Image (cartoon, rainbow, N blue to C red; front, top):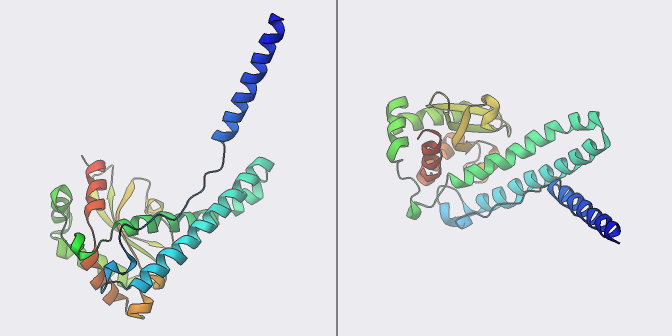
Length: 230
């Protein structure tokens, strides 16, 4: 009887451990983050119509396709299907990058009444002056890079966490900043895809870049910078 009870306990333990292992290997999915402001709150710099389409349609599409690609990757790995694993990498990079980039973009914006357009304070403000001379000089450089960028992509202010230095970079399509270097951490990203501005600014990207600074919120960038450069 004692041996039978021991065997039952071992069986139950093995079953519980197997269940926990299966749960730990469960596929993680991603969902659309809520915005901390209304779609129309950034007007007139960015129209409510653009914000709603950008968030509900474009960002959601990246997330939907990212989750789909991750599910297919999970199945391919379980089957040992190496060719499918390789084939899925571009979809994961594009859609996963779209999710990463837009999640940062929304945090970089705020209505004027909630601090949008106010200059950065603290250590980030000092670092901008040190690296670029002034905030105005930084804005001019980012706007020039964004206006000159051919095709769709992003213009970034990042920090090299090893060198403790601010950098301006551009990335094509939905490539995240880390694709330009493993030590680069994004602080501020501006979307220069046409879907971010065309309904309002048509093909005049420089006007979009000029006006977006009226609703740029430096709090997220400052928090990340202080974490990476304490």
